[in-house]
Length: 229
Image (tube, rainbow, N blue to C red; front, side, top):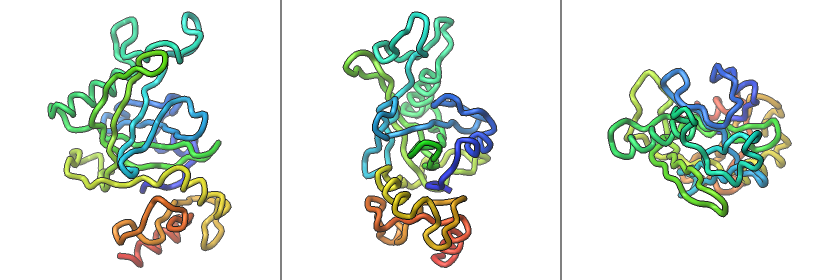
């Protein structure tokens, strides 16, 4: 389920790997993982577009050290000196073959850092395009991902007809987190939390204001879902 609050340890347990890098291509051979942030002073320029249905994700820099004292002035690498692709290169190749219709889009789980120690699972995205553009100092990689509904079953092929989904904006999540004091708005439980639409999006509710979003624990979130159905 998307929009649930998760810790770094829980993310690693779920993905069965240490997520020490922000781009992780083809985990278990059936999905990839990226870590994003649109907070002030975030290291990369990630952004949500098209009312929160599209993520433009910036590729990752050269590691700092040795001949690279300032990675922000060096072109983002697509391949190592050995010729093997970096994470940028792997995601780039998958995006471009999908764009040409040669392969199905790569499924990508996206986790967003919203506060120190607090992450939000933003759900499944499809990687559909990639390109290289120039910023003020160097060439950077950009990746286009579309948020989709109901494509979490990795035993089935990617659903290219999956309905688009809107991600709750970061500023709304932060406002709701502060207002609800990081607890379920019904029972004050501090764990297994979800950002819940008070009026569901399918029934005309919005993701764009905190007035229509609340924190619910897993139990009350499930109870509400059962009631709506």
